[in-house]
Length: 140
Image (cartoon, rainbow, N blue to C red):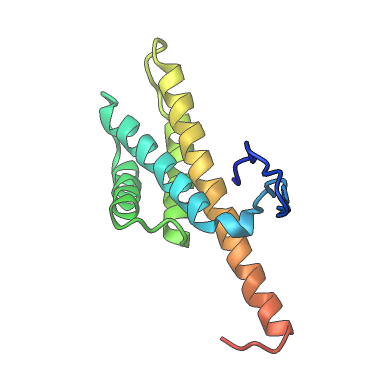
């Protein structure tokens, strides 16, 4: 942001100050931030799931490994991540848990939901860019 002038000279010179309002950035300008936010949400969910004192079945362990791999490799924008996160959300919702910790399961579901939503949003924006480019004659 440009600082406001505090001193105006009174001799024969002059200044022109232009003050512009900051413009909001749209989602397309924020692809990297959206992806990083999704990774952060997935990382928090993974940490919360790891801290649970619950015995997981084989399918949940497999999806958990897929989520861990996606977070470690920082790969959020693929079907494997979305499928594993969706499956984990469903599996955790169906899991019997102690009545004194439903807020932890709710928080994990929210974190996974946010990661999935951000992944889908970025993938949609990239797909739209590719499709518009194709219609404009720009080839991959």
